[in-house]
Length: 273
Length: 214
Figure 1 (tube, each protein chain N blue to C red):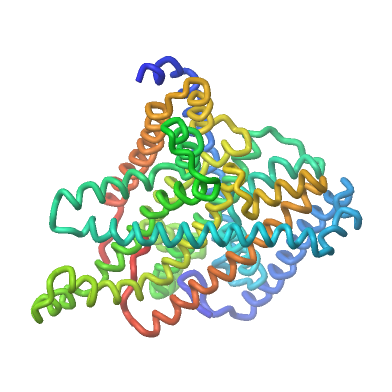
Figure 2 (figure 1 turned 90 degrees about the vertical axis):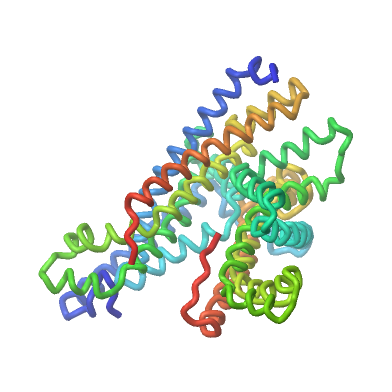
C-alpha cells in the first residue's frame, strides 16, 4: 500500500517494518504487564475480588442499569431529534422572526456544558416549583443540549439536497411545506442517518450524567453496586466494558451505514456538524 | 444580579480552574494525538492496530466513566495523584482520541501525488513531512481542531462531578448558598459561551488566513 507518506516498501523498508513490529509488540506487552503488575501488587487481581462478576445477580443488577440507560437514551434521542428537525427548519426559514431565535438557540446551547444544564434542572427549577421526576431530570437537560447538535446535523442534510429538488417540487405546484415534507426531508433524512447514529453514541455517553442526578442508569448502578460490594475498580471496569461494547457496536453501525451510502450516493459528501 | 458580584471571587476562581483544565488538557491532548496519529498512519500493522484501539476505546467510553475510574480507582492500585492533575490527564487522554482522528483525516486528505512528487525530487521523509504533507494536512483541520477545543472546554465541566471546583461546581455552590439560580447559572453559561466564542473567533481567523482553495 502506497500513501502520501510512504511508497511500496522495498527490501530495506520491509526489514525496518519487521523490526518496528517486534518493538511495537514488545512495548505494548510491556505496558500491559506493567498494568497487570500494578493491579496484582495491590491485590486487585485476587480471584475473590473478581469472582462476584462470574455470578448472575451482579450482572443482572448492572444490566438493569443498562436497560435504564437505553431507556433514557432512546427517549432523549426522540425528543432531541424532533426538536432538532424543528430547529433546523426554523434556521432555514424565510421568516426572520423564526430564523433568528432558532439560530440563537443552536449557537448558544452548543456552547453550554450538559452538566451545567443538569444542575439547572436539579437545583434551579425546583425553586420555581418545577420538580421533575428523576428520569426527566436526566432526560430534559440532555434533550435540550442534544437538540442543538441534531439541528446542525439535519440542517447540513437539508442543505445537501440539490436545489433542483426544491425547485421541481415548487414547479409541480406543491407548497413550500409540502415540498419540504415530501421531497427534501426524506432525502435529507437518509443522508444524515450515519451522523445521527454517531451522535447517538455521544448521547448515550451523556446519559452517564445519571451519576450526578442519581438516576439508576448504568454508571450510577455501578456506583451503588461498588458501595455495596466494595469492589470499586472491578465494578467500574465492568461498567466501562459494557459501555464500550454497546458504543462500539453503535459506531460500527454508523460506519456500515456510511459505507453503504457512499456506494449509493457517489461523489457527495456530507459536512458533519 | 448583585449576587454575582457578591460571589465574584469564588466564581472567578472557578473560571480560572476551568481555563487551567481546558488549556492543560488540550495541550496534553495535542501531544498525545500527534503520537497516536503517527501510529495510525505508520506502515507497521501492529502500530496501526495500537493507534486504532486507542481511538476506538476512548471515543466510545463516556468521559465521566473514565474520570470516576481514575479518581476513585487509581488510589486502589497504589497510584496517588492530586485531583486536578488526575482530571487534566484523563481529559487529555480522552480528547486525544478525537484530536488524533481529526489529524488523521487531515493527513489522509493530502493526495498521494503530493507525497510521491516530494519523494521524486529527493526530499527525505522528514523534509517531505515538514514542507509538503503537514502544511496541507494541518490547514484542512483548523476548523475541526477548533471544534475539539470547544468540546474540551465543555467537557472539563464533568470534572465538577468528581469534585474539582471548576466554574460549574462554583456556580452550583454559590447557588446552593444563595438560592438565586437565574443570575448565577446564566452568568456561568455566558462564561462558557464566551470561551467558545473566543475559540471560534480565533479558529475562524486562522482558517481564513490559512485556507487553500483546491
